[in-house]
Amino acid sequence: MKNIILSLCILFLTACAASSAHQPIEPIRKLDDIKRLTDYVSTPFIGEPSPENYSICHNNGCAEFSFISLTSQQWPSVEALFLPIASNAQQEREQIKSAIALLEFYSGAQSTTYKDQAENSLAVGREGQLDCIDEATNSTVYLRMIANAGLLKFHQQSSRTSRGGFIIPHNTATIIEIESKQRYAVDSWFEANGEPPHIVTLKAWKKGWKPEND
Image (cartoon, rainbow, N blue to C red):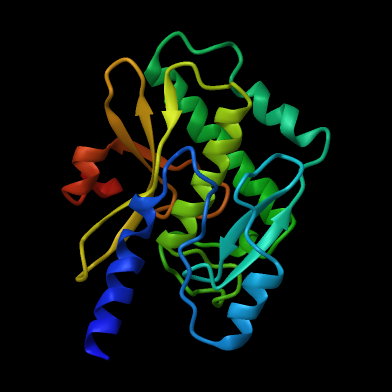
């Protein structure tokens, strides 16, 4: 039994890093009852997201997920954030921040995630709250749609990763700057729904970066 629990913990902590940027996106799930397992099978997470049809996680550890469909006006407003075309990678990272914030806002209007507060705050209850597992998955979904639309010139969407091991695990989405090969964390967990994520070098993030470090 002890070995089984250890194996499940390792799978839980490494699931983010195991997902390639070119593979269908899978949520990092905490399955603790038969009903939720059945729900996941009958209504699977959308691994190949599009603006017309994508999934987002919420309620901590992807306990629930919602299915979102942007309107014909909403997605063009996301694309508009990448105009004029960035002249360098730093400018594009600012565009990525704005796009993820807007996508969070649109997704929140079709789900309970508009209630999401910064970090793991439960000030308004657990419904709609996102932990770092939810945030890492959702930001990866948004980045995949942005990349598939050809909006990125200086970056490519990369896989999720984690820090902290078993003690204080924390997860994030990532991107890679094409020219320098520098990998960046795209961390939405520190802010409430609709607020821009933080984008910092993965090296700094792995060392325990927090917003107050800036």
